[in-house]
Amino acid sequence: GKGNYRHFMEKELHEHPAVLGDTLRQYLDPKTLEVRLPRLPFDPVRVPRLTISACGSAFIAGQVGRYWIEQLARLPVDADVASEFRYRDPPLAEGGAAILVSQSGETADTMAALKLLKHAGQKVLSVVNVPESSMARESDGAVLTVAGPEIGVASTKAFTAQLAVLACLAIGFGRARRELSTLDEGRLTQALLQVPSHAAEILEKDAQIRDLAAEVAKARDVLFLGRGSLYPIALEGALKLKEISYIHAEGYAAGEMKHGPIALIDNQVPVIALCPSGPLFEKTASNLQEAAARGGRIFAFTDADGAGPLSRFAERVIELPKVGAFSTPILYAIPVQLLAYHVAVLKGTDVDQPRNLAKSVTVE
Ligand code: F6R
Image (cartoon, rainbow, N blue to C red; front, side, top):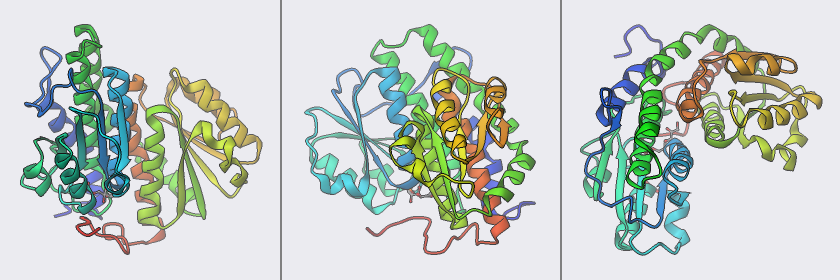
C-alpha cells in the first residue's frame, strides 16, 4: 500500500535513499571501496564500442551512462532511443556490445532492440528491475536494479537505481581498462556510498520544492537547463513534468539556449537550472544570466558554493548538498522529480495514473 503517503509516486520518491543504498551495496564493497560487478557477457577491455538503448526515462539514464562510461573508461558509446535504433540499421562494431536499460524489462521497442542486437552478434547486457522479465531472460547477462516494485506510472526510484548501476559499471569498466587507478576507484565509490544520505537530505527540501512548484504550476511552458551529465537530468525534469502535470516542458543543454530556445524566454516561462559548482559552473551560469537578461525567471538548483553567484540574478535558489560532479546526476534527479510531483498535486491531475500512459509499454 501507500502507507502514509497520498500517492505511490510520493512514497516511491521517499524510497530513493533506501533503494540507492540497496542497489549500491550490491555492486560496491564499502570496506575495500571496490566495485564488484557480476559476470559480464563481454570484456570491457576488448570491446571496441558500446551501444546504449532504451525508452523514456530509462533512455535518459542511459544518456548519463554514456557520459560516465566515455569519461571514466574512455570507451566510445552510441546512445539511441530503442524506437529509432531498431529501424536505423546502424553499422555495429565487430565484437561490440550493448547495454539496454529498462525498469519493467518488457518494453516492446527495447525488446526489439535486444533481438536485433543479438542477431547482429552483439553481446547484450541489460540493466533491469524485474529479475524474471523477458529482457532479463533473453539478454546475455543482466545487472539488477534493487528498486523494488514501482507502482507509479512515472518512473522515480527505478531511474536513480539505474543511474547507480550505470555508475558502478562505468567505474568497473574504467578499472578494467586501466583508465582509473585504485585510488580513483576508491574516491568514486566513496562518493557513491554517500549518495543515499545526500538523497535523504534532499528530500528534506520538500517544503522549498513545494513552494517552487506553486510558481511552476502557473506556467504554460517550462524550460529545464543543464550541462554535461546534468543535461540528461534536465530532460528527465521536463519529461516528468509533462507526463504528470501536463505542462509543456523542454530540457535543453544549457549551451544550446542561444541557438533557438532563448527566443521563447519571457517572464512567463520559468527556467529551471541544474547548476552545481564545479568545472562547468561558469559556463552554465553565464547561459542563465543571458536568459535572465531577457526577462527569464531563473529558478536554480545548486550547492552552497553556487548559491552566491546565482542569487545575483536568479529569482530563487535551492541549495543541495555539495558533491563532486560524478554523483550530481543521481542527486539532482530527485528534486526535479519531486518538483513534477508537487506541480501535479497542485494541478489536481491523476499523479499515479497519468492520462494516456501505461506503466509498461508492451506494444510498439
Ligand atoms: C517516465 C517513464 C517512462 C519509462 C519508459 C521505459 O517517467 O516512466 O518513460 O521510463 O516507458 O519503461 P521501462 O523502463 O519499463 O522500459
